Amino acid sequence: MTLRCRRALTWLLALGFLSAMVEPALAKAAKRKAKSPWVKRRDKRGRMIVVDINVPPLTRDGRPNVQAKAAIMIDLASGHPLYEKNADEQRPIASISKTFAAMVVMDRKLDLAKVTTMTEEDQKYARGGAKSRLLMGRGYSSLDLLHAMMMGSDNRAVTALGRAAGLTPAELVAAMNDKARSLGLAHTRFEDPVGLSNGNLSTPRDLVMAVRAMLEYPLLSQISSKKEHDVWTADDKPRSSSHFVNTDQVARAGRYQVLAGKTGYTDEARYCLVIAAKVGERKVAAALLGAEGELTRFADFNRAAAWLIDGGPAKVAARSVLAARKKQDSGTGTGTSNAAPVP
Image 1 (tube, rainbow, N blue to C red):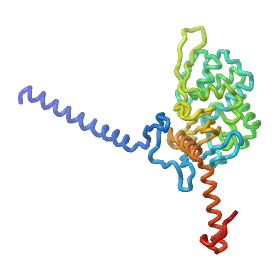
Image 2: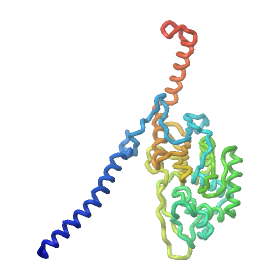
Image 3: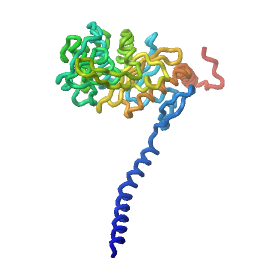
Image 4: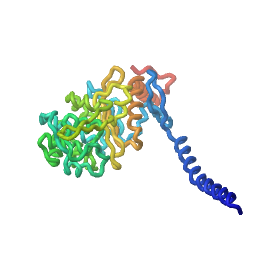
């Protein structure tokens, strides 16, 4: 066999090997993409939203088809529940814990201009969570640390803010528990300040009361509803910045006016969201805990919001009245055709 033939054969064998390696990977990726339930669509105002096409917007009884394990939506003005699903089920809440840390440090008259340096203590309490973007040994203002914590859910920011407010991590946890008790949240408790412990527990009903309380802190409301923010070092070293994008996709999408909110995730808690927003002409608060997909919690809120705008609560109430009348008619044995109208 000539040298040229041997080279050609080598190339053919190499191409065959690459094809055998690449084609299955491409096929697998295409299959995964085809199976993905998430698609981008435009709403009635022309804004792009993410929709789970495999989940009908409503259940058979006309309620929002919420996929989270436990959820509630309330009217903020009255506190009246609009939708409930296992609303009193106590579950891990992950980084939603940070809303309590934020209220605690604000209650202690936090100096927003104070510069706090990232230490090994901050690194220790953040260990096991998402990678922090706050640099070890660098100083940040309390204002920027609040942005990092509430928007980007940065774990190092929590203990640093506690230190800026004069609290050790243990004292911060104790103060968070005191805050929950002062708000009357009997089913909320904390074991760590960041939210990585599965012992940080609450219920959807407690959490909508917490986000309602957070609205009394205008700065926290403003920060948690922002789309993005640049956090800068504030020490005597050359300045550097990190760009934080809000982890709350509802706030980023701009479909509804978000008033306050916080996301959370751990393997045990799954994907969580607490949010206050203006939906139509109504201000509501919602808590969604234990969603399996990262986007599901946001899709759940969008489904509940659309249901509310469409008059869902009134329709469900009308269905209940009609069902009660039918049950009453069947119980008296009169049937529906000759029954007298029920006032």
